[in-house]
Image (cartoon, rainbow, N blue to C red; front, side, top):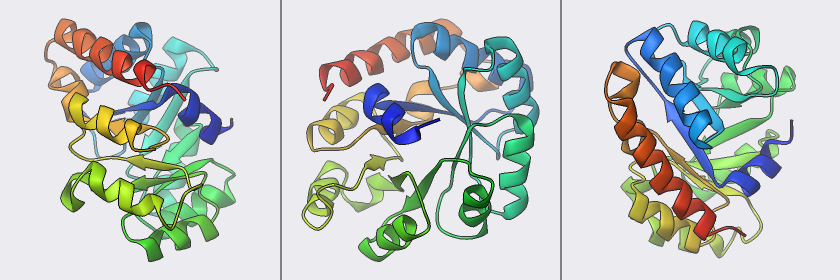
Length: 210
């Protein structure tokens, strides 16, 4: 898969982290049904490898399912074995190196200019700016655009719909959204509310289509 092209096209990456396996599977499937079809399942969620495997079985081999919070080499191997077709890391390290060795396209976490340079050198497909909200939100992304005008940047962390619009307007390739989009759905909460939030984020993403 070409992760960078998918990020450029979808402009929205959903992040699912739940405490209930079955609810998390339902959440992934509901997001995809609404059109949010680029989905990361965080390995810190309960039974995350099983969630990825079950969602892939439900959605088919073409589903755009990744594994998030890939920190260690074992995490990368677990992600691949579960059926993830891309990896997302919170930072640099063994998880990124092993994901690349396994030829998993990787969205690598970085925050500072030095980390961005290191992530690119390690073979990341795109850079996850995390935690983006801790550095001033869209203003920080705009500042990074100076030295990195062509680097694909994906802000993650506290991205509500308003912030998503600001990031995309400021040149973000895509935004990664967890709890502001997923809410309590992956813990057994309201799927109808999830669907409504998904439609809101899709309107933002489509309104800022490149």
